[in-house]
Amino acid sequence: MNTATRVRRYRGTTPQERRAERRQRLIDAAIEVYGTHGYRHSGVKQVCDAAGLTQRYFYESFGHSDELLIACYQQTAAWLRIANKAAGEAAGSDRLARFKAMLHSYFNILKEQPVVARLLLVEIRGISPEVDRAIDQTLQVTSETITRVLARPGEQLDPWLQAGMLGGTIHIALRWMAGGYAEPVEVVTEAAYRLGESLLA
Image (cartoon, rainbow, N blue to C red; front, side):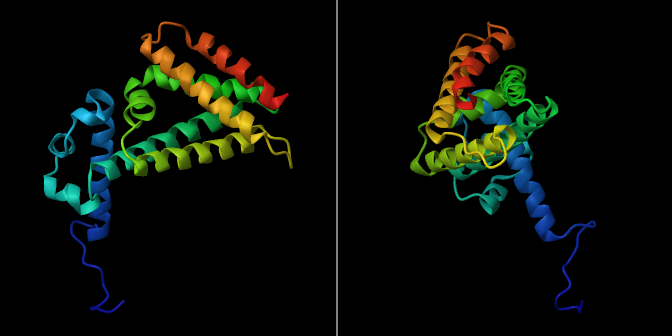
């Protein structure tokens, strides 16, 4: 690499690496801020203060707050999806057992991490068409993950039943959250399991 193309480093990191690190700090801070205080009640300054960055670094990575909200949602949803997939695969080869394990993982995480639950299920709704598209795309990826974990080789799960199962599970979660997570995880898991049994029958 010659001098003209060599990437300048500062303390062992490139400018691109430092920018990526600042972007991640903003996302991590925003997940906590939005999930605690609500997206509509949280501004750029509040997120930047939580991240320990000045506001100019916000606009280095994001054009507006909705872009940051989408990044938070996508990152958190991906993490939850990976955790649920791992729980399902660890449950053995029986797909009903896998399904129940994935549901139990989902509800358990929502209860143990209410900040995540609020971000994923409450704060993301009704913001903008761009955010709604991100929700739809994320739910599609979730459906594809469920198919990979639960479907038999070459089998395609009924897309209408799958959409109904996802929507129903989300509504069970929202009602559970609104009630302060009063019922045990096993109770809501069983309710969602019964709802989804027809998908795998």
